[in-house]
Length: 388
Image 1: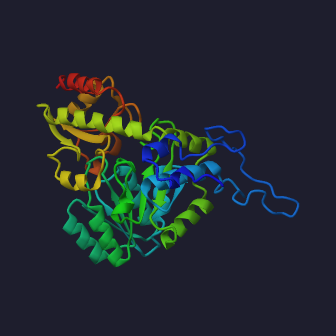
Image 2: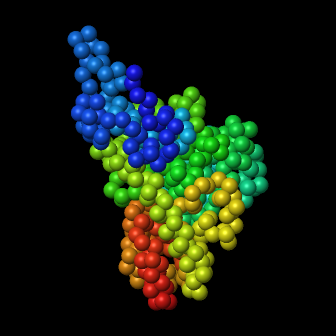
Image 3: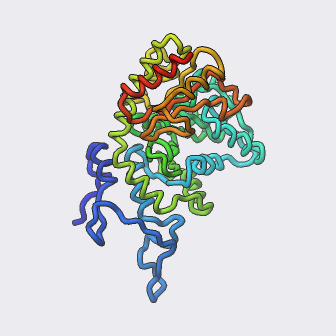
């Protein structure tokens, strides 16, 4: 009898990840899967496919299937699909909304998402409504009034670290027939499972913590219901539009997922310590992090998240743009770069990236906390803040 796949074995998620979803290469016995670079697959003399599951690599790739199965298991979802980037995944989901439809999006989220949605909706005659999701009653009323086709949340939001009530919003979406999707990139499936809270879809920029090594672009979408109309559309969109990963990138992602539990555990603990230090520092105006008791949605975050609150935080230093740039420029361990979720700690002055049109505070620094020793991270910020 064939062995049960690890994803169906009831193993702890740490064990599931450590084995990369389980199994070995049947051809060689290798414990690491091979990289299949072929783009097409042969048929026999009767023109039947030699492998019933492999026709063309745009959609038929054993590494996709293995990685997607592992991520679906992590999310507690039915099926997953990999995309060429997080933005490619977002694009596929938002094309669910047809011309004349309505998209309701949480305000104050990742600027790249907001900018893309504004341009997409303007080009395609889609009504775009932006609303503050942390004000639950206002957001629920917006859903009831606008009756959108799709509701887009980001939990926690980037870079303001706001936390929306996924359960309540997903329930209201279900009542009005809206598809609910949560971008949970900053949390990872180890901390937050939106599908278990009622969301229809969850997406991640796999470029970030899922891969965690700052060496590939990728995105992934997981559905709670394998038979939904929305999921059928997204699967077909991936297949026909071709926004897929390369085989090597899929292999890198699967490799990185093996250490996800260890990386997330260290990064969560480091972020907890750094946020506590910064919150008490006299030269810091505000720390935005749902793990802090002072965060306005701390209790809500606790009710939805397990094992931590993620490795993304933002800090507003005393002063304005000049002071924030002075601190960023004085950091040694924290590298000045865009992105988040890698093993190395990063700092970014968001106003420089986004510009005045995004209304980002000029004294805000977004931090991605890596796996270095926490004492070194704290010491680095301590000496940088001493320059103020």
